[in-house]
Length: 181
Picture 1 (spheres, rainbow, N blue to C red):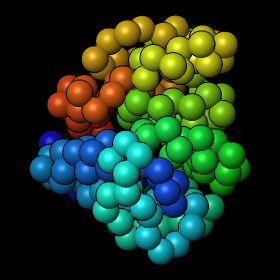
Picture 2 (cartoon, rainbow, N blue to C red):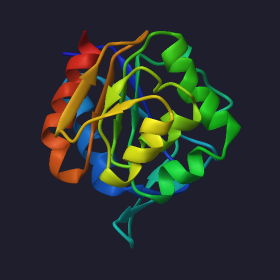
Picture 3 (spheres, rainbow, N blue to C red):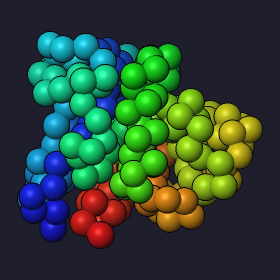
C-alpha cells in the first residue's frame, strides 16, 4: 500500500503511449496513492495508441515549477515521442535527476529510459527497455537485459524498468512495491 504517497507522472505535451500512462496511474490509485500529471506546459497532454491520437489528460503541475521534494516517486511512461521530447527540455531532465539525487523510486517503461540517459542516472545500473534503446543505455554505462521487469537498487534509489505494454502487469506491481518500500 502506498496510502498518503503522491506519485508524479512526467509526460510531454504529445506522444505518451496512453496505456503506459493509464495502467500505472490506476495501479497507484488502487494501492492508495495519489498520481499527479506533470508536464512541461500547463493545459492538457495528448496521448496516443501507438501512432493514433487517443485521449487527452489535464496537467496537474509544470516541471520547473515543482520539485521532486513534493513527490514520493516518479513514473516515466513511454511512447517514442514522449521521452524524445522530454530529454530535450532541461526542466524535465532536471526534474528526473532530482528523484535520483533524493533517493526516491523511479519507474520507466518502453522508450522512457531515453530521458534517464539524458539525466545521466543509468551508469552502473541494470535495466530493460524497448529493445532499440539497448545501445544507448549501454553507451551511457548501464547493463541492458531483455526481461519483463527489472528492479535495480544499485544506486541511490530503486529503479523499475520494463520493455513494452505487454509487460504492464509486472511493471505496475513492481512500481507500486517500490513506491511502498
